[in-house]
Length: 163
Image (cartoon, rainbow, N blue to C red):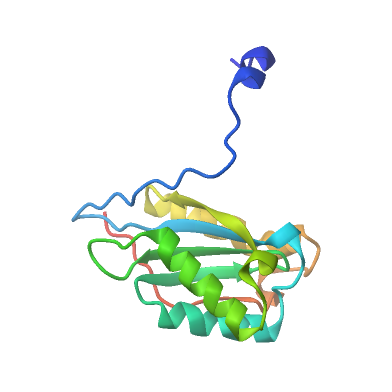
């Protein structure tokens, strides 16, 4: 039931609600994360930014980055806690955002959007499906013909799903 009168009466969320990571001893905690540039400026898809991001993610070990795609104005990545209990995701994101800004001599408020979107995946099927969707972003944006042609992607750590 999609009643437009009810939907328009619902309060709109101004910021994403960052839920705590649900940890279970018999399954992985994998987060799908999207981070955008300020005003969606197309400044990320460069060799320099790609290298700086890889370095920052590798150094900030509270969370481990798995697969990722860097689009011109946003980043999609999968990450998992590098420490248990999981450290706050917001602190880790803030850390590497700041690191990137220092590396490229930019102010955080002019480079990155203030917040980010995160979703904890529920199963290995959602990880596979979400990855296929993400890796096809450059194709849908008509930047390349096939996902493998897009050079601003990779995998820093293999995030395994154990059920």
